[in-house]
Picture 1: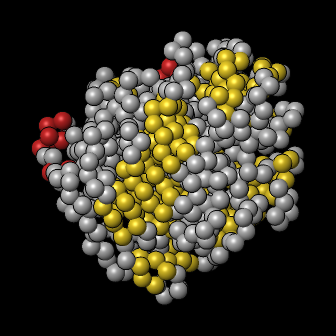
Picture 2: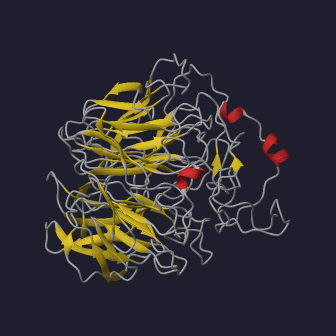
Length: 596
């Protein structure tokens, strides 16, 4: 089904007959054709910092300053030769080396946004079940994934294009963490911040050439253009932020940390309003380090709790409790393991009930947890990656196996990579990136370069064919792999690698998924831009959600507007994925792809 773009102010329900009338010519390129560079306008526009620290301006980010190698299809029988797409660099008036901005609309389309997302109909349209008008600018979906996905991209839909690249600002040219994505600004001027606006990318950055700098500044970038909406000074540069509506006011807040002193690895939890103004700073000082923030309503009382580096805070920033010996618990996750509706806080080898009492403890060493049903028993398991390998813990806390499959340290992705309706595990281990069956037999392995062995993994079904493409960014490249482990896309990036990974979301609200990848100088003095957004040249990748709110994102943990469910749907019974993005139906909610 072709993707139809609609006006941004209010989405309109489109009948299937109208969709059919649009034709399929958008995907009509021959599968063996090589991508060609689009015609680029030679002008750039100035972006104004309008939030805290306003008064500075920068040139708008520009497209395509990197080369990409891509094949034309993700099928297992892929035989197309790689093609190269390179944007020609120019120098703007500020002396920043960049390329001309790319027009983000397709040749036959002059509008920019869509109605795709977590909703069931449109304002002025009718609900399919009741006939009552439904506002697509507001979340209608309960994340039950009962609707089958119907969108499918043409097979030759891997013609990558750098939609925009942010060069940094005020000397902040290094990004070492995974960004988060949510709507924070009223882009269409209707007085509301909602799903009809353009999503925003939240990212901390810091100056080079330091390997790690615990102090930096936080930037909120427009998802469609990379324009800086505002900058917030003095935040944790390697603290992985989260976004969520923590006070039930209908608007997301940004959660990050503030170092106790310049360059310090300890500090305070920090909450910012949607416009960047400070909401609160915790009274408690603790080790913020390179740890990822996670949020959930852990006791289903209607108030959100915040988990960071083994400490649990309430929605006002008050410390509730801290787990013992949590120094190695950099990436925490939250799930209801025992089915009592209260959430467990999972640090990896240990887990705690919502009140801080112990739930389980196993002797496997520090590691990063992922939650999914990995043995088809209908209950969640905790997969922990450690320096010694993979360990599996039952929902009861019983250790099934420990430290298997070699040394793997990276947080993993869990998704159906082969369309068999069963999950697989994707993770890297230094020199190899692998997709494993749940019995730990390798489906495939591909060479990568990550000497630290830290980088995380993710996935998305870009074509809507029921098989997800694995994504990984090592020290020098971003990769997308097909179902046989062959690279569909390779593009330069640089990083020392922390726990960061590329992420997928519809960042410009056009009904087609994009990829966000970050870079820093890394080991090879990389000149890759700090933030890049990559799209399909003709926007043929299928619709994705417009949010990615935390490192341990698993779809049901957050609604698309940033609100947190009081009773989180159990992701292992809905999608059975972890750290990967969900497909949405055009004009509908999250959906499940049907295997081909």
